[in-house]
Length: 420
Image (tube, rainbow, N blue to C red; front, side, top):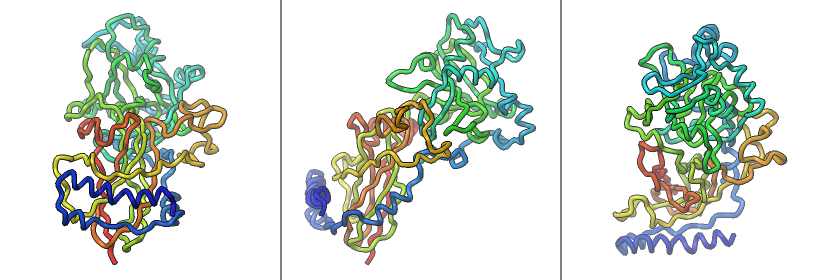
């Protein structure tokens, strides 16, 4: 038997008993705790589950979609998209002063003056300023990420400087095409400081035109969208058409109108991908999952199985004293997926060594990582499997930000049935 498995078997019962003893559980409940059967090294069930994991990068067509609009802009036919400026040869971006909270611009980019910023202008800037970075795109109010990709574009600040701002600039407002219907407008905003400067090793906010080495499709927000590396998806507006440089001091995000925290950054959390729903007594339990690696990074993933006949003690709603056990964070994959040309990470891409094409650290912040664990078998009964992350600061999920409106971080619960 592997040493780590021996440790698991020896310590799990002690830890579980101490947890319930500290919390005042009854002697009868403690005595009913299950004894684990042995799990064999190299169990084929676990390897099969690992082999079935999704690729690290997501193909454009496989991203989840939460687009708005009636009709949704990506469903327009090509002729209509050309008419409204949603193709690469017709796209134009206006960058103006906010008429209600003016900032001083010496060179606004407008259609009236025939100075609007074009796709060719964007590619010309890209010759000198191209940026690529991995990012998981995830919705503030959904559990599973929409997809993980390598996003390519030009830092937004390069376009901002073209307008020659001189004073009274505090915030950048932006929105995309919305069928010329004001009631369908979906907008977002950023403090200008975040646009101009990248702190704590973050990539820049970009005008994005490629995903995984391919032009953005209409469904992914093409021809051009905003991508904010550390933010949830509502900040990365699709089908970008307008930027307003403003002296307004507060956000105007559409998402804020629905009681959402518009300044929330990506959280670190995990969920399962593969869990057997029914098992035989003593059958090892192969579990795989993913972790969203937020701004706080990821130290490890942990799991815990609880017998449903046990009464959970009060006063510990985040299970901080439960007998959690470490899962294994899987290493970088051999194949990246996502439809990358030749399955090669483009050079340069932030976080990757340009000579080897491998990540400089792992897991990468603002991205995803996969994990796996083989748990020893259980006696017949009903159980609940939970998993959580410990971030790079040593803080356990769902802390430090457990509130739903600032992004999902709840501890997942999955039922297990062990039947003879």
